[in-house]
Image (cartoon, rainbow, N blue to C red; front, side, top):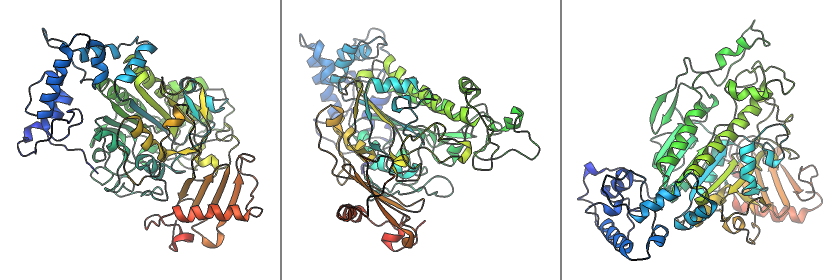
Length: 587
């Protein structure tokens, strides 16, 4: 895999080999001066003097093209835009710079957005909720929690109603998303911590989504929870294609929303929480559960999601004039129940409540139902902020925006949650950690104006591994060989697309699972870490989406055909074995 180089101009470039004249300097990562021109130049790169041959030729060709009569209208659509920057007094403004100014006009019309969309490759924004259930958005049937921004996003785009996360828990789900490989082939197949901090890292040899887009010339930033390897490990996000990272590296650290610090790159940034709020605890003996003061030590002042949301918006502003990939793995609404008072206010007194005093994981809260609802509405507001910034920069028509969740809703009453009260998974069986539908079918929305039909939906089976080839195809980037994903572009465009031949999942945790979907049929194997207790179940999701009626005994031939896929798609992992298959001791 090509890893982003970190040399700068001060290191010199005389030892670097020359390259040919057909290299676009926006994609050149060989010469320090190319990177400097892209990132720091106050003038458009085409007007700068440099010893980089492709940049000189690019500038000469662009200036000659601009000098031709009638070329003003096509100049912006024929090249990628230059970095946004002020013009020195008296400097001649290029037609490309004028096009950038037009695209960032806050009042850009849909017609102008359509023009912008055709002028360069689309930006990609991927917002990943944490433990959000299939029915927890208004546009997916939620009745008690307000999600107006996501509902508008769905009305302006497409709902994917049979989309499956990479795994039923955090880290392996993210691994499938980043690598384009299903969990029978992916390297990370369960949550596993790596001391002293962080999770089991992505292996260095695995090509990942961020690197694919970075190598294609995109600015890349991740904001939120990483969970795929600590800095300076093989899973370091800054070594895997991201230019920028801000947030939590470790999943356990992300259990508190008022921590002592976050990471800006590899640097710890202190937050004004003195003391920081822990991610677990309970009321002390003698503290009154009905007294709000009993919960005071579980509330901080510097809310981490505020910092993360601000950093993400700043990334959009800083890269508005060039293609970018913004990965936003939010920590919301994962436990603990931490939410500022102003977000909680709309839900106070709205539900019958029983204070959660702790003792069943995470931290206490006097109004746990209100807190959980407020966290989801808070997530919705953060999405609205991103959408508003894209609108303000005139980028809406040129941005492929995806919202999804890393797995299904958590188990109640863990941490004071009550997902049954909210019907968080609706009619679906199972929760987080399960390969039944409720643990892995996730609410997913795609908006791409001019491409995705507003108010549309697709019930085609798809999964997290499909995003890497989808984004590569949409952005004219090269997807790596050996992945399992299938591009969703035909579906997003409203075209007929062949049904997925199969979708495969496995999970080493929660007793050990395998599942495969083929058409309406689904085969589930569970308790695979206890071979004598392993079971095999068959469901017809068209007739029984709740997975209430096991058909395995009535359809042995169908079981055998689906079992053959399970056997074929599982590759043994010494780190994350399935005992019933691999003959080793699993979790």
